[in-house]
Length: 274
Image (cartoon, rainbow, N blue to C red; front, top):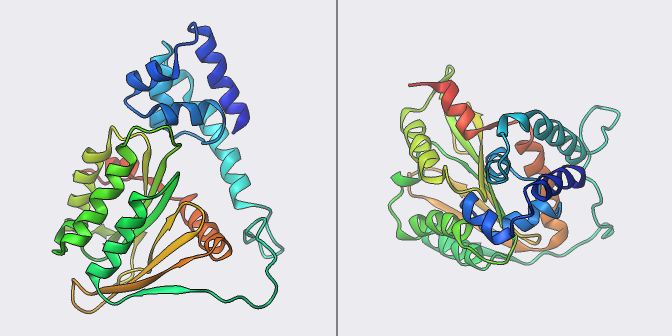
Protein backbone atom coordinates (compact mmCIF):
# COMPACT_ATOMS: atom_id res chain seq x y z
CA UNK A 1 0.00 0.00 0.00
CA UNK A 2 2.87 2.38 0.85
CA UNK A 3 4.59 1.62 -2.47
CA UNK A 4 1.45 2.56 -4.39
CA UNK A 5 1.07 5.73 -2.30
CA UNK A 6 4.64 6.65 -3.21
CA UNK A 7 3.79 6.32 -6.92
CA UNK A 8 0.82 8.65 -6.39
CA UNK A 9 3.04 11.16 -4.61
CA UNK A 10 5.50 11.06 -7.50
CA UNK A 11 2.67 11.73 -9.97
CA UNK A 12 1.54 14.69 -7.88
CA UNK A 13 5.10 16.04 -7.82
CA UNK A 14 5.39 15.78 -11.61
CA UNK A 15 2.35 18.04 -12.04
CA UNK A 16 3.86 20.77 -9.82
CA UNK A 17 2.40 19.43 -6.56
CA UNK A 18 -1.16 20.83 -6.40
CA UNK A 19 -2.52 21.23 -2.88
CA UNK A 20 -4.65 18.50 -1.33
CA UNK A 21 -7.56 20.93 -1.19
CA UNK A 22 -7.30 21.62 -4.92
CA UNK A 23 -7.09 17.91 -5.74
CA UNK A 24 -10.09 17.17 -3.52
CA UNK A 25 -12.12 19.83 -5.32
CA UNK A 26 -11.29 18.35 -8.72
CA UNK A 27 -11.87 14.79 -7.49
CA UNK A 28 -15.17 15.69 -5.76
CA UNK A 29 -14.17 14.13 -2.46
CA UNK A 30 -12.96 15.25 0.97
CA UNK A 31 -9.42 16.52 1.49
CA UNK A 32 -8.97 13.84 4.14
CA UNK A 33 -9.46 11.16 1.46
CA UNK A 34 -6.69 12.69 -0.66
CA UNK A 35 -4.41 12.89 2.36
CA UNK A 36 -5.12 9.28 3.36
CA UNK A 37 -4.30 7.86 -0.08
CA UNK A 38 -1.13 9.94 -0.44
CA UNK A 39 0.11 8.97 3.03
CA UNK A 40 -0.62 5.27 2.54
CA UNK A 41 -3.19 5.11 5.32
CA UNK A 42 -5.92 3.94 2.96
CA UNK A 43 -5.74 2.01 -0.28
CA UNK A 44 -7.99 3.90 -2.70
CA UNK A 45 -10.74 2.39 -4.82
CA UNK A 46 -10.22 2.44 -8.58
CA UNK A 47 -12.75 5.26 -8.88
CA UNK A 48 -10.77 7.38 -6.42
CA UNK A 49 -7.48 6.48 -8.08
CA UNK A 50 -8.84 7.32 -11.53
CA UNK A 51 -10.10 10.69 -10.28
CA UNK A 52 -6.70 11.46 -8.73
CA UNK A 53 -4.79 10.50 -11.87
CA UNK A 54 -7.10 12.63 -14.01
CA UNK A 55 -6.69 15.59 -11.64
CA UNK A 56 -2.93 15.26 -12.05
CA UNK A 57 -3.23 15.41 -15.85
CA UNK A 58 -2.40 11.75 -16.53
CA UNK A 59 -4.34 8.96 -18.26
CA UNK A 60 -6.23 6.60 -15.90
CA UNK A 61 -5.82 3.73 -18.39
CA UNK A 62 -2.05 3.90 -17.83
CA UNK A 63 -2.59 3.26 -14.12
CA UNK A 64 -5.12 0.45 -14.15
CA UNK A 65 -2.59 -2.40 -14.23
CA UNK A 66 -0.47 -1.00 -11.41
CA UNK A 67 -3.61 -0.39 -9.30
CA UNK A 68 -4.73 -3.98 -9.89
CA UNK A 69 -1.28 -5.30 -8.97
CA UNK A 70 -1.24 -3.26 -5.74
CA UNK A 71 -4.76 -4.43 -4.86
CA UNK A 72 -3.83 -8.09 -5.42
CA UNK A 73 -0.88 -7.69 -3.07
CA UNK A 74 -2.99 -5.97 -0.44
CA UNK A 75 -5.75 -8.59 -0.66
CA UNK A 76 -3.16 -11.33 -0.17
CA UNK A 77 -1.87 -9.58 2.95
CA UNK A 78 -5.41 -9.16 4.29
CA UNK A 79 -6.13 -12.86 3.83
CA UNK A 80 -3.02 -13.67 5.84
CA UNK A 81 -0.93 -16.88 5.72
CA UNK A 82 -2.83 -20.02 4.83
CA UNK A 83 -3.19 -22.79 7.34
CA UNK A 84 -2.58 -26.45 6.55
CA UNK A 85 -6.17 -26.76 5.40
CA UNK A 86 -5.75 -23.78 3.05
CA UNK A 87 -8.04 -21.50 5.06
CA UNK A 88 -7.08 -17.97 6.04
CA UNK A 89 -6.22 -17.22 9.66
CA UNK A 90 -7.08 -13.90 11.31
CA UNK A 91 -3.86 -12.06 12.13
CA UNK A 92 -2.74 -10.35 15.32
CA UNK A 93 -5.76 -11.12 17.49
CA UNK A 94 -5.28 -10.02 21.09
CA UNK A 95 -4.49 -12.68 23.67
CA UNK A 96 -7.31 -12.44 26.19
CA UNK A 97 -7.12 -15.92 27.66
CA UNK A 98 -9.95 -18.40 27.79
CA UNK A 99 -12.57 -16.29 29.54
CA UNK A 100 -14.09 -12.95 28.64
CA UNK A 101 -17.22 -11.11 29.71
CA UNK A 102 -19.04 -9.05 27.07
CA UNK A 103 -21.67 -6.41 27.74
CA UNK A 104 -24.37 -6.45 25.04
CA UNK A 105 -27.09 -3.90 24.38
CA UNK A 106 -30.27 -5.59 23.17
CA UNK A 107 -32.75 -4.11 20.68
CA UNK A 108 -36.22 -5.62 20.62
CA UNK A 109 -37.60 -4.01 17.48
CA UNK A 110 -36.75 -2.53 14.10
CA UNK A 111 -36.93 1.10 15.35
CA UNK A 112 -34.82 0.37 18.45
CA UNK A 113 -32.09 -1.31 16.41
CA UNK A 114 -31.88 1.23 13.60
CA UNK A 115 -32.10 4.24 15.92
CA UNK A 116 -29.12 3.01 17.91
CA UNK A 117 -27.15 2.02 14.79
CA UNK A 118 -27.77 5.41 13.15
CA UNK A 119 -26.60 7.20 16.29
CA UNK A 120 -23.37 5.18 16.21
CA UNK A 121 -22.90 5.86 12.48
CA UNK A 122 -23.17 9.61 13.00
CA UNK A 123 -20.48 9.44 15.71
CA UNK A 124 -18.08 7.26 13.67
CA UNK A 125 -14.52 8.52 13.28
CA UNK A 126 -12.99 6.69 10.33
CA UNK A 127 -14.53 3.46 9.04
CA UNK A 128 -17.92 1.82 8.57
CA UNK A 129 -18.29 -1.74 7.23
CA UNK A 130 -21.81 -3.05 6.70
CA UNK A 131 -23.62 -5.95 5.10
CA UNK A 132 -27.12 -6.01 3.64
CA UNK A 133 -28.44 -9.45 2.71
CA UNK A 134 -32.22 -9.55 2.82
CA UNK A 135 -35.02 -10.71 0.55
CA UNK A 136 -36.37 -7.18 0.08
CA UNK A 137 -34.58 -3.92 -0.82
CA UNK A 138 -34.09 -1.22 1.85
CA UNK A 139 -36.76 1.06 0.38
CA UNK A 140 -39.45 -1.58 1.04
CA UNK A 141 -39.14 -1.17 4.83
CA UNK A 142 -41.48 1.41 6.27
CA UNK A 143 -40.00 2.52 9.59
CA UNK A 144 -38.51 6.00 9.67
CA UNK A 145 -35.63 4.69 11.78
CA UNK A 146 -34.48 2.27 9.06
CA UNK A 147 -34.72 4.96 6.37
CA UNK A 148 -32.73 7.37 8.55
CA UNK A 149 -30.04 4.72 9.14
CA UNK A 150 -29.41 4.13 5.42
CA UNK A 151 -29.45 7.87 4.71
CA UNK A 152 -27.07 8.60 7.59
CA UNK A 153 -24.44 6.20 6.24
CA UNK A 154 -24.31 8.04 2.92
CA UNK A 155 -24.44 11.45 4.62
CA UNK A 156 -21.49 10.44 6.82
CA UNK A 157 -19.48 9.40 3.76
CA UNK A 158 -20.31 12.65 1.96
CA UNK A 159 -19.33 14.93 4.81
CA UNK A 160 -16.19 16.94 4.07
CA UNK A 161 -14.05 16.74 7.22
CA UNK A 162 -10.40 16.42 8.18
CA UNK A 163 -11.02 12.78 9.15
CA UNK A 164 -10.08 9.80 7.03
CA UNK A 165 -13.40 8.20 6.07
CA UNK A 166 -14.32 4.94 4.41
CA UNK A 167 -17.59 3.07 3.95
CA UNK A 168 -17.65 -0.46 2.54
CA UNK A 169 -20.94 -2.28 2.04
CA UNK A 170 -21.56 -5.89 1.03
CA UNK A 171 -24.90 -6.15 -0.77
CA UNK A 172 -26.45 -9.59 -0.97
CA UNK A 173 -28.53 -9.90 -4.14
CA UNK A 174 -30.98 -12.83 -3.85
CA UNK A 175 -30.91 -15.22 -6.81
CA UNK A 176 -33.12 -18.11 -7.87
CA UNK A 177 -31.63 -20.46 -10.46
CA UNK A 178 -29.10 -17.77 -11.34
CA UNK A 179 -31.74 -15.06 -11.85
CA UNK A 180 -31.40 -12.04 -9.50
CA UNK A 181 -34.44 -10.80 -7.61
CA UNK A 182 -36.09 -8.09 -9.71
CA UNK A 183 -36.82 -5.65 -6.87
CA UNK A 184 -33.40 -5.88 -5.23
CA UNK A 185 -31.69 -5.58 -8.62
CA UNK A 186 -33.71 -2.45 -9.43
CA UNK A 187 -32.80 -0.95 -6.06
CA UNK A 188 -29.12 -1.81 -6.64
CA UNK A 189 -29.19 0.11 -9.93
CA UNK A 190 -30.70 3.16 -8.20
CA UNK A 191 -28.15 2.80 -5.42
CA UNK A 192 -25.26 2.81 -7.89
CA UNK A 193 -26.48 6.06 -9.40
CA UNK A 194 -26.94 7.57 -5.94
CA UNK A 195 -23.37 6.68 -4.89
CA UNK A 196 -21.51 6.88 -8.22
CA UNK A 197 -19.74 10.14 -7.31
CA UNK A 198 -19.25 9.20 -3.65
CA UNK A 199 -15.57 8.26 -3.64
CA UNK A 200 -15.45 7.41 0.09
CA UNK A 201 -18.03 4.65 -0.52
CA UNK A 202 -17.54 1.20 -2.04
CA UNK A 203 -20.02 -1.64 -2.50
CA UNK A 204 -19.41 -5.26 -3.48
CA UNK A 205 -22.06 -7.83 -4.39
CA UNK A 206 -22.65 -11.21 -2.76
CA UNK A 207 -24.82 -13.49 -4.87
CA UNK A 208 -27.27 -14.89 -2.30
CA UNK A 209 -29.01 -18.18 -3.08
CA UNK A 210 -30.56 -19.04 0.29
CA UNK A 211 -34.33 -18.57 0.58
CA UNK A 212 -33.89 -16.55 3.78
CA UNK A 213 -32.27 -13.35 5.00
CA UNK A 214 -28.62 -13.43 5.97
CA UNK A 215 -27.18 -12.41 9.34
CA UNK A 216 -26.37 -8.75 8.85
CA UNK A 217 -23.74 -6.70 10.65
CA UNK A 218 -22.45 -3.17 10.98
CA UNK A 219 -18.87 -2.65 12.14
CA UNK A 220 -18.21 0.89 13.32
CA UNK A 221 -14.59 2.00 13.58
CA UNK A 222 -12.51 -0.49 15.56
CA UNK A 223 -14.69 -1.51 18.47
CA UNK A 224 -18.48 -1.54 17.89
CA UNK A 225 -20.39 -4.44 16.32
CA UNK A 226 -24.12 -4.42 15.53
CA UNK A 227 -25.74 -7.74 14.60
CA UNK A 228 -29.25 -7.78 13.09
CA UNK A 229 -31.63 -10.76 12.98
CA UNK A 230 -34.69 -10.64 10.73
CA UNK A 231 -37.43 -13.06 9.88
CA UNK A 232 -41.13 -13.67 9.72
CA UNK A 233 -42.91 -10.45 8.78
CA UNK A 234 -41.06 -8.14 6.40
CA UNK A 235 -40.65 -5.35 8.99
CA UNK A 236 -39.55 -7.62 11.84
CA UNK A 237 -35.97 -7.13 13.00
CA UNK A 238 -34.12 -7.16 16.27
CA UNK A 239 -30.52 -7.53 17.37
CA UNK A 240 -27.79 -6.37 19.70
CA UNK A 241 -24.55 -4.43 19.82
CA UNK A 242 -21.24 -5.02 21.58
CA UNK A 243 -18.42 -2.56 22.16
CA UNK A 244 -15.21 -4.57 22.47
CA UNK A 245 -12.06 -4.48 20.26
CA UNK A 246 -11.40 -8.22 20.55
CA UNK A 247 -14.99 -9.11 19.68
CA UNK A 248 -14.75 -6.68 16.76
CA UNK A 249 -11.53 -8.29 15.49
CA UNK A 250 -13.30 -11.58 14.79
CA UNK A 251 -16.07 -9.94 12.76
CA UNK A 252 -13.60 -7.66 10.98
CA UNK A 253 -11.62 -10.71 9.86
CA UNK A 254 -14.84 -12.36 8.66
CA UNK A 255 -15.87 -9.22 6.79
CA UNK A 256 -12.51 -9.07 4.99
CA UNK A 257 -12.84 -12.74 4.04
CA UNK A 258 -16.24 -12.02 2.51
CA UNK A 259 -15.20 -8.76 0.85
CA UNK A 260 -12.03 -9.83 -0.94
CA UNK A 261 -13.43 -12.18 -3.64
CA UNK A 262 -16.64 -10.25 -4.33
CA UNK A 263 -17.46 -8.30 -7.46
CA UNK A 264 -17.82 -4.49 -7.24
CA UNK A 265 -21.41 -3.29 -7.58
CA UNK A 266 -20.81 -1.49 -10.88
CA UNK A 267 -19.17 -4.51 -12.50
CA UNK A 268 -21.95 -6.81 -11.26
CA UNK A 269 -24.68 -4.55 -12.68
CA UNK A 270 -22.87 -4.15 -16.00
CA UNK A 271 -22.64 -7.94 -16.28
CA UNK A 272 -26.30 -8.33 -15.31
CA UNK A 273 -27.36 -6.10 -18.23
CA UNK A 274 -31.02 -5.25 -18.52
